[in-house]
Amino acid sequence: MPAIDPPPFHLHPGTAPLLISFPHVGTHIPPALAARLTPKARQMGDTDWHLPRLYDFARGLGASLLIGTHSRYVIDLNRPPDGASLYPGQSVTALCPTDDFDGERIYLEAADEPGADEIDERRVAIWRPYHEALAAELARIRAAHGVAVLWDAHSIRSVLPRFFDGRLPHLNLGTADGASCAPALARELLRIAASASGFTAVLNGRFKGGHITRAHGRPDAGVHAVQLEMAQCSYMHEASPFDYLPEQAARIQPTLEHLLGAALAFARQHA
Image 1: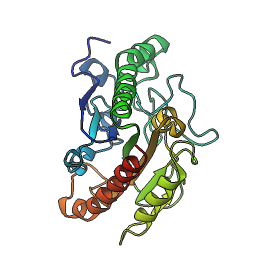
Image 2: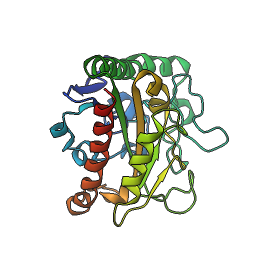
Image 3: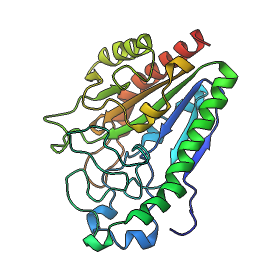
Image 4: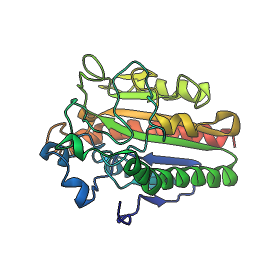
């Protein structure tokens, strides 16, 4: 790949013991790569649309923000670097996807799909810098506060037969089945999410946390990681052109603030 422009991420350091990671909000696809993609893929429908806007209150909490810039169709920052499946036996997309969430190919021809060398180039140029920045910011936060909470922010269409039956709950908390954060924090977050009027919630359901949650959550070392996979119907139109819905978003934002506030309270109690 050519030189990375824009850079793989934008980091906004904060003052609190909280880092919010946005690995799937990027929409940049290098022009030469975009020319190899189908018209549907160039719409990037599987993007975690508008999440930095939805979480715009987080800077006021003092949170650090790490925001990916490249589309997940270039490389998926929430997959293991070796491409191993996060959910063995279930349908998943790859480190460098060749199909979309509907199971449709994203490249015009099979010959357009990336080979091992190109995948490695993307991994070195985009995936590795993001994870190095994530680890460094967590280390900085922990050094300053004695503890760090990583909040991995995601969203997805509420109906996706490829991945799950029926309709997804609005708020899907994941802690790698309890391995990535303290049980007390997980219980409090689920209590808040489950009590949110008009919304549904689950802990470690279909989405238990991806590579970021599993690789960086180390509660025994003072780093607690939680993934929140939100149903996009909570704040936006799920179909093209994927519009943000301010009134709908305003209904879910107080719950998000409550969740992040609880994460901060936990961190400060355990500093």
